[in-house]
Amino acid sequence: MDAFDKEIITAFFVASLSGDTATDIIRKKISLSPEYIQEKIDYLVKNGFIENNKKTLTEFGRNSIRVVLAGGVFDIIHPGHIHTLRAAKALGNVLVVVIATDKTAQKMKNRIPLHNMELRKDLVRSLSMVDYAVVGYEGNIFKSVEIIKPNIIALGYDQVHQEKFIIDGCKKIGIDVSIARLQSPIPDIKSSKIENDYGKSIYGI
Image 1 (cartoon, rainbow, N blue to C red):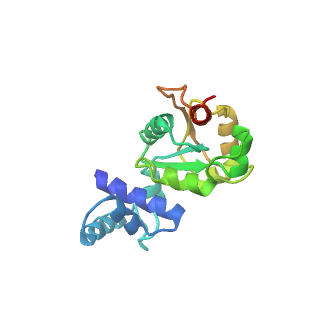
Image 2 (tube, rainbow, N blue to C red):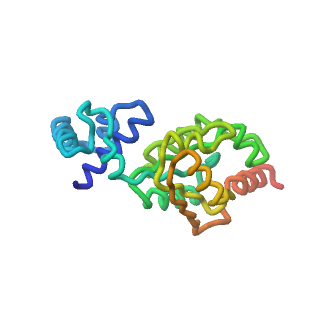
Image 3 (cartoon, helix red, strand yellow):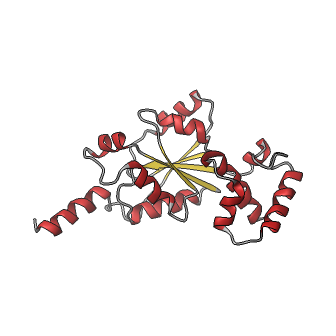
């Protein structure tokens, strides 16, 4: 199986979350002829990675990739986010990012977010290392985990989640995950600091 086969399997996984067709996802990422893409899909069907319906992955196909889940508010995208998400993507084949709801963001930041959750989701989804972004569920971080079924959950340097709490919560819903604590080379950069410094520069305070 080559790198392009992995890309196709990744597209089928993302399609299972987004509702898009895998072929549309593939064509947006890689400029190849429909005939070649179909030839590759047929090969993966024949070898047991994709179901005969050519719409979903087999269990073997799903287990051939590592899915990484990251989460956060992402109200202002800054270099710390970019570094963290790149590091998260490097842990596996697929990076899915869960965006905090507006209510959750307000609780976490003690302020109303500058951008609503749909805009924050679209901004994150536009990043090249992100395969899929989705808004999370209010008050239940494990609901998204249950749907995505990641192999790895990546935590940013400033995320206070307790690793044991996450592992135990995942076990309760029958999901075995690894936790990766990511570091930022520039930990002093935070959205709140950027917003505060911007306000000072605008109003001269």
